[in-house]
Amino acid sequence: MLLQIADVLTRDQVAEARQLLEAADWVDGRITAGHQSSRAKDNMQLPEDHPTSRQLGDMILAALQRNSLFISAALPLRVFPPLFNRYQGGQSFGNHVDNAIRQAPGSGMRIRTDLSATLFLAEPSEYFGGELMVEDTYGVHSVKLPAGHLVLYPSTSLHNVRPVTRGERIASFFWIQSMVRDDGARTLLFDLDNAIQRVAGEIPNSPAPVQLTAVYHNLLRRWADM
Image 1: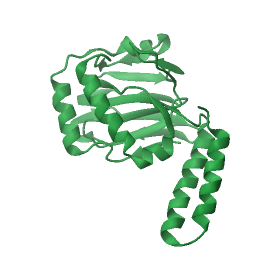
Image 2: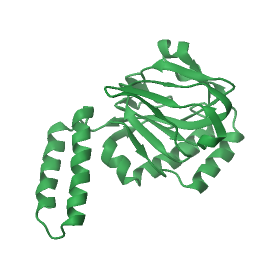
Image 3: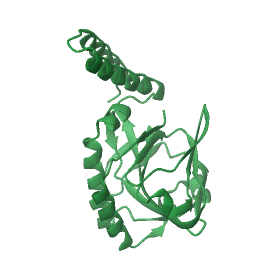
């Protein structure tokens, strides 16, 4: 499932993030790439232990906790501390699949990467190129979203970032370990949750939402991996 989530951050939060990132010291993005990915990766990245990374990462994690669509779609068990990257001057990231396991530096937290997320921090009009291209069984999807919007997709997907030929593409990226590792099962639960909300709104006082909610939680109980 590939899902776009609007307005994860407000305009004021995006403006604050951009101001802090403008003043930060960036390094070669290959510091977090695996052996294969490092050959395809050409961008700049904020060091994971940089104070700005931690400050903005906490802002994003708090926003995600308040976002019901993200919670419903990802069913997060653990979220990797958000990272930040920048592309400019023709930089790109060739086809790759994200590492299956990630460990946060300086901590014992390790996560299985079930879902990948990109949170855009620059408006599409600020740069040429830079589309996130995600391949799944239905083809290749091009994603370039407004600042503050997020795209969520399975970490098993082959994906790339097209060259940025003008301006700067600035974004946050991170991974999620879901309570439900199977993408198909997670998608079914997401669709069922959406259906429950529609039925509850369209047919007040119907017993159906209670019955469907019971089905939802029994499926989640069966599939949850914690």
